[in-house]
Length: 303
Image (cartoon, rainbow, N blue to C red; front, side):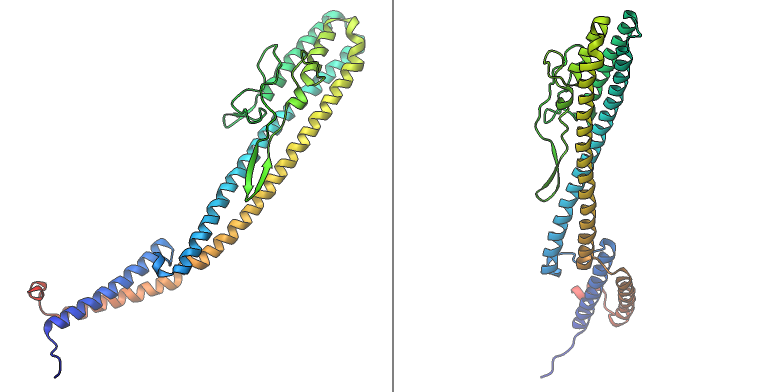
């Protein structure tokens, strides 16, 4: 016995076909708008797991990139401060050489001593340089100023290392232990820069009695301090180079992973656009055909 095709069956099948056509059109629309072919895991379980893994790697690299950029800015700030300290130290050296030649009277030497004291404060101000609200020369005690203004020259930071993570199990140390250069002043008698500067000012005030030390022990100590500064600048420059290298490597990895992500999930825009146009034309044609085939109203169909 043959099955009888009723108007209700025709209507139901027509509506089902229209729904399928509309669903295909909507999917292509979503692919074009999102730029992704995998809209949910069930579309491509293996591809979806790859997308999650690649995106996780990309997110991690973005974090490492920020760390490297932060480290570069940190080192740039420290380097600029050390350059200023170097310029100040050279100016003190000029005063030291002038004061040691015996052609200046006690008043002149007193004036020079005042200049050295002012330059000493300038050195301490540079040592208190901050980046993003943190003191770059305080070690891990980055919320504490390394040196207080005034006569107190004790170093307030620590020698703990500060580093930036620039990759999996890869870090770059950005610490500059400024205390190896500046020390803790005359009270510490450590022969470092602040001790040397205080001693120079003291010997200048002693007039002819201190002139012999200016051109001998004071000059030797100051030159030794300048050499220490040069070494710190070299270490900082090496760290900056490491950070730039890590950043470049990071960018290359991001490019590679982004390409892999695109190959796995990115929509082929030209192809999808053609598909969208075809599906839209087919859906509109189906609507017109259905209007002719299905004569009953929706109310009649439901009844």
